[in-house]
Image 1 (cartoon, rainbow, N blue to C red):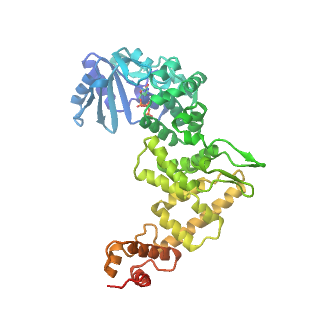
Image 2: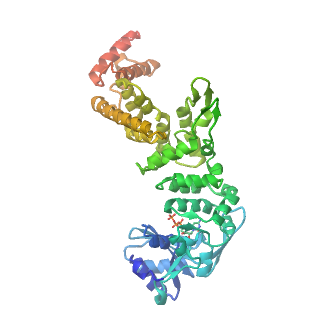
Image 3: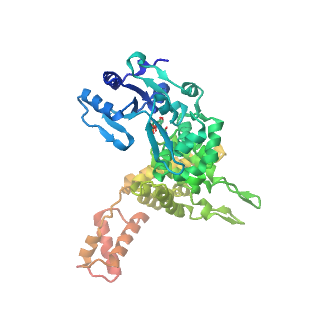
Length: 470
Ligand code: CTP
């Protein structure tokens, strides 16, 4: 098969000519070839050189006016350039072997075939020649093309060897299956289950990178079900596995919170590409196992699971080395507030409840509503419809309240400084008490959200506490 017509980027001819002049062989390899055949966009191109990748990169750059910088990673024998929107890497073909308990490979130079043998999946082991006499020809020693046609993930060698070389590949197998909607062949899947414990030698950062890619697929539940089935999920994310199971007492059963969570994740993925909002969906019920109780009258309860859940989000983020910054606080906020709009949809909505929700959710109110709508997963379609109608109502009322009271990015109309000046105070607890009295009065609807009204109110509150205006 010749793919010459698909090699549209100008880098291919440049690399081909440069390698030809230097009398060396070069191929495009790996993910770029796979994506070219699948007609997916790709931002990375990998070149494999039979010989020295760094030297070829340096010669290539001399032919390109726009690129001056080559990043060289001597230890890995690789060089990287950025050119026309692409991250381009050059590496010498190699053989690799790994020690059992380490990710550090022993690297030796090798042939194209050696290099293809050490790759993770048949669909990632294909190469396209850039050599003058075979330009565009596909080298596909493991029938990767056929596996693409049949939508299969398969290792080129014995899967035990491929996964033992780099256990992260077990997660990559699942990630590619989830992204491409492919099936992992039984032998490969069996080897993942058998070797799942080996994931323990992989760093949390690399694991999370794959998890995020699974979360960002069209239907993330597919990936999570595979992670669960192979035993990987219990090792990397036990809190999620703890959501599994249905318990029944006196004929009363609760739902399986694992499958419910995956359904919520799938539903929210239809609405958003915000990875952190998808994380909030994944974690919204994470504290249900820890808060579960049975009550003879009311059945199963999970009181406080939203507050405890927000705390557990921190634990999960630390364990998976996810960012401990405003992304964490955003997910915690959504988890802690996820029941509030449901309570509003179920009951008569009061203005003060709407104001409080707007005040607490701030600019994340839309995302919170999206999460709550995704959380309605009953089998009873009438019930789902009714809830969604009610949510529409809540959204409208939130909008009205927002327009009226401007609470989304609420700033107190009177600052602590102003209170201190008004009563000639140093920082003290009275200042805090007056500030929260002003906030409460505004949220309850007893006070207008404006400076003059709040100033009067502050003077009255101070007097009630025995303070004298300055
Ligand atoms: N590779 C491998 N084993 C790994 C990682 C990568 O064999 N653990 C090989 C595969 O041939 C892969 C190539 O290196 O195609 C490039 O890897 P990478 O850039 O991580 O992945 P892509 O396959 O390009 O896919 P994506 O960009 O979606 O991550």
